[in-house]
Amino acid sequence: MTPEHARAHLNSLAKPPGSLGRLEDLAVRLCVVQQTLCPRATPRRCVLFAADHGVVTEGVSAWSSEVTRLMVSAIVSGGAASSVLAATTGTELRLIDVGVVGPGLPDGPVHRNRKVRAGSRNLALEPSLTVQEFHEAVAVGELEAVEAWRSGIVVVAAGEMGIGNTTAASCLTALLTKSPAEATVGPGAGASEEALARKRQIVADVVARGRPRLADDPETVIASMCGLEIAAIAGFHHRASALGLTVVLDGFVATAAALVADHLWPGVARSMIAAHQSAEPGHAVALAHLGLEPALDTWQMRLGEGTGALLVMPLLDAAAAIVARMATFDQVGIDTDGS
Ligand SMILES: Cc1cc2ncn([C@H]3O[C@H](COP(=O)(O)O)[C@@H](O)[C@H]3O)c2cc1C
Ligand SMILES: O=C(O)c1cccnc1
Image 1: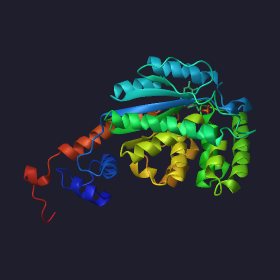
Image 2: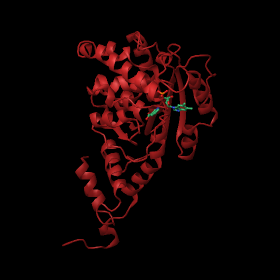
Image 3: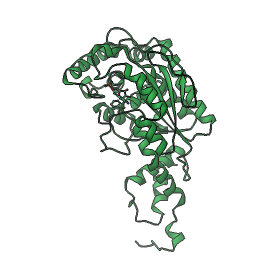
Image 4: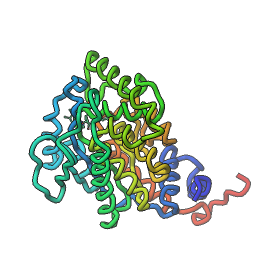
């Protein structure tokens, strides 16, 4: 199924060609990703991965690390933005703790404790993860993708919660897209000008250190600036894509994880639909590198936590319904010959 084939089908439906605008682009993408003219947007699941970041001690975030643990509780108990959007869009939600500092919640229908370690190390001073820790976190994400597939899920999204994770995402985006640090650093969850300047300096230094070694030892370099939840999302994206699931890509941090997956296992972007373009400047850079067009590009969202992916789910329902259920010009008796 090529884009041209899907577009020709849409043009045969009882409407002026292209008149559903961006919904048609989304429908084409869904058909191409699923290789069918009967695409599906359900059943679906959003899996959030949570972990802490040692680099927070450098003052790069407006928030302290304990907010990660508190937000994990809020997500699980239904009060977070992601919980509300998952509930209103008919999307199952899971929260996997891959490395939040502090005691974990008990396992339950939504929450799982899969801590690899209590947060990543401070990437400004030392490698944030060892290659072994990176692999363990990747495996946690891979297992969640396998479980989704075994449960008959068709569409998945990965999201994250981890104070400080936009610093790691900026490092990875600059490293893997070969962009300057200034192009990939933004205020994250509201960093002050002072924090932003520190963040820029740290990202520039860390990427400059890693860049010369990337070709020879990609896993060590990626692990050295990666967060546990970002590694888990990379594993999730990779395995979900290999199993033929449709992957809806969330914001800047989830897309940095997609860059990691694409670098280690090229081709994952073929299974992906980019939900939105985050207000974080690095997101546009990362999406362009992956060759993905966001469905929503003027919404100025900058939360992560799976929220952009969740917001786009009802549009996927609409896109799937248009493709599979609309009548053709022929069926309604409209002659398009000579038009
Ligand atoms: C209450 C709250 C809820 C969030 N949900 C997602 N994030 C987002 O912001 C954090 C990254 O931004 P930075 O790198 O600047 O710390 C991550 O937790 C991300 O998921 C949140 C942030 C906060 C404060
Ligand atoms: O787009 C994102 O993923 C994002 C933006 C700001 C803060 N946290 C995440």
